[in-house]
Length: 390
Image 1 (cartoon, rainbow, N blue to C red):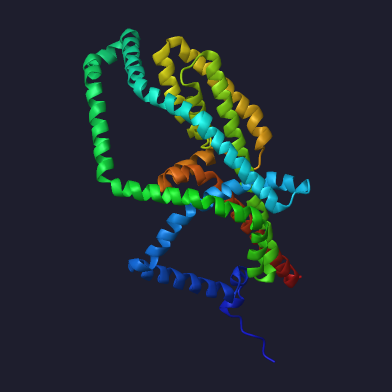
Image 2 (cartoon, one colour):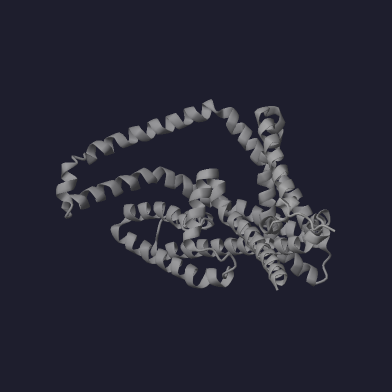
């Protein structure tokens, strides 16, 4: 009996990659890419899918955030022998009551503060420019500044006109694009209306979804897929719950700190700090900018008070709140976070900045698990090769 002739698929490298399965996978990827390329040239094939995704992504993301926020509360209600359906109804009633309370009590005050800030902000900005001009004229940089021949009085005279022209152009742009505005508002309203229904079914049947997906996979892949979904669920849950709690703590601390130092628009600035804090590193910069302008416009010493409050808030958040609430669950280096924010923001805009970090965390879970499978396969083939040589 003649021994089998070695073939291309029996070589060590190809066997390590999967043998003939690798060839089939490469052919499948090539055909799939070719199909997508051809269909992309025919717009009516992918356009309905784009519309579907555009309308589905936002409510699904909002409902998913709500699911991870309210799932611990639902589990707590179920531990005290409350049926799941009644627990969901209790959560929805409490959420409706909280939203109603915010609309009745907080929203009118915020609206008043925002209206006043819009009216007063040009005055704050003028005072900032004048103070900066006086400082530069008497500083060590005065010779360089005077050579620029910067006319502050002319700028102050043109500022109201420039603001008026800007507002007119903005109004004209809105008028021209009124159709797009109505379409966007309609889509947003539909998304908000759809979120409670999606959230209800996620809370009711969300725990069954992983098992349903596992049943669709081949049996030998289910254990690894189950571990990936378990790690991904842990990452998303830790990030969403932790980030929301940290944001609320930051907003409350900023509001209380600004009240103590007598800062104008303390509640509005606290809410702004709470909202922007969901974006690491960039959020605090966005939040402190209007606060710094208002502080300088109020009194020079107010800027020192603002710096003290902001430093205390950042130290308390960085040293005590975030480590206790979020811990080290994401294991993402700060430099990596900055690169992810810049890349996601350039690709997808504001949604990319907000969702970039959790998206990177999920991708990291998947790649880490694939690397573990790679090492397992490598070790198995190395063991078989050593036995062969022995």
